[in-house]
Image 1 (cartoon, one colour):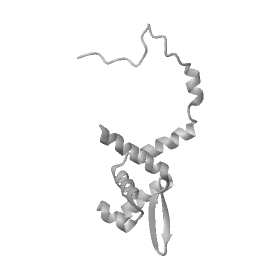
Image 2 (image 1 turned 60 degrees about the vertical axis):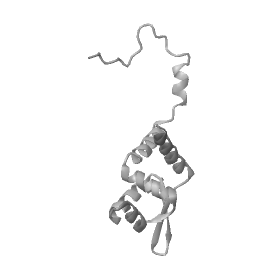
Image 3 (image 1 turned 135 degrees about the vertical axis):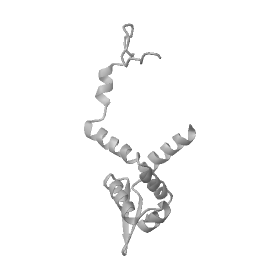
Image 4 (image 1 turned 90 degrees about the vertical axis):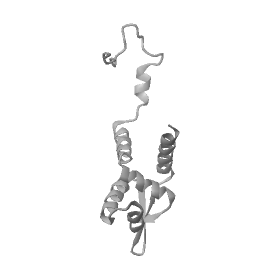
Length: 121
């Protein structure tokens, strides 16, 4: 069994040609990286991925989503509330019916790019 590789440079490494300080200056602030991590966390749940995929096709109500995903309406509503709080989905009320859709083109592009990446493998 081979020993595990160390995550350190060896004695002959002089680092990259870039200045680490210049990279550190352009890193997003902590609040931004926390929000980004929360977005990826939301995409880390298969049920939410299925919800997002369905909503990438068209605007749907909770009843439609419950049928499509074969889930109870309260479970779907719970997931939609989570996604709405992260601004991944938005809602529109028409009478007593609430319709959900993706919040904007950025959300759709993140999702579609991820889907393409997986299909590319």
